[in-house]
Length: 505
Image 1 (cartoon, rainbow, N blue to C red):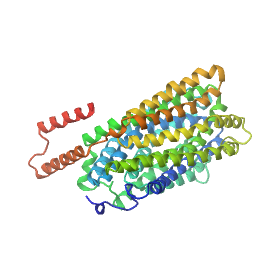
Image 2: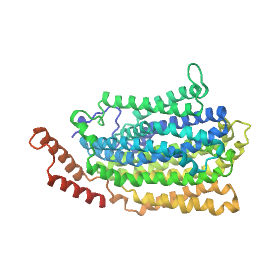
Image 3: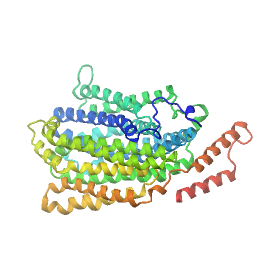
Image 4: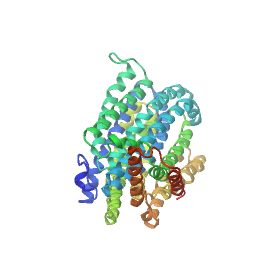
């Protein structure tokens, strides 16, 4: 299929032109989306902290950690679909891109409903496991349960944004993140404080506003995908792609599961760390929650550049242009040092003022937050290095090595540092453990990039994609003709054996 057959609206060809310019123009909208999302969270934290108190802010800190852990379930799956779509676009294989999208949607929507139902039921046990301060427990439960209700819309919205970036479109996700944030910013204070005709719902209002904003943005994005004729739009007979293609699904799980587990490893380590921080009291927990708001901004360039590296590398790998892949990584590292370094410097200068927005300028938690920020934030420079390297490697399906690196850096290094040095350094051991883990991740990630076998990895080979596509066409044509309304037993057996072989691989 030629480029002329692929809808061009908002889609950037990542296999041509200057790598530096292409990366920055692709990454900037992704960075803008992250900035908007973080700004929304920060402003909501200001409303909660200033008008509902430190207990409510501590409650949202506990709830947001759990929400991040649940989003991790879709992250790996979404990244795998993004890479499959990116490689398909590099090969100009529109059908493969559509089937990857259909398989992802048809799998993640029912899974997210199950996660939401389980989260609602087990929310009290999860908060107990965290050691949530008793004064914040009821507020945290109210907040968390509403977030669980919103989970299917939130996860599907995230998946669609990632898939669009796989096609080279990072602009459309930016517009709908802007819509989501705008709705949330308007509704949150109204529902927290009961302004105008709205009820005074307190912390429940904060979570409810987030749910409404994500749902409306999801509906708008879905409509836009169809109205613009995006390559991801499934029409007529293509709707059958929502019934997962086994080969694609196996590829998504075999590659996406380790990527999701990376997020789970980070989340579980953070949960363990939060249980230690909760022991220091509500003020320390609130200070940590406010500091997390600063860290979301410091992380943004790294995450945007990692996403850009993955999308660009995936399309170039699909096109067989390996000479560009190394340059993509180098430019990602350069931009990370420039952008992340500048943010760390700015936040170091203005941390007291910014923390005061969340906690109140006269709060006793502000000095605690400043100490956390000074001791830990510099480590995000190394975090960015690791994310760019991982972004390139996962674009070719290399996911086990980065997972092992994350497990080592989060548990033996970070938690070992925190537990081992706590008797000597006290709470400072908790804050220093963050950069210790990040430095370890960057060093091990660099070793993998230079000496690992990631260039020999694969997501789903082109010949297997072609076979899978041909299988779909043959089966659909057979059913349509009425000569055979179901696959034969031998066809089923062949597909089952092939699925087992792929899974073992």
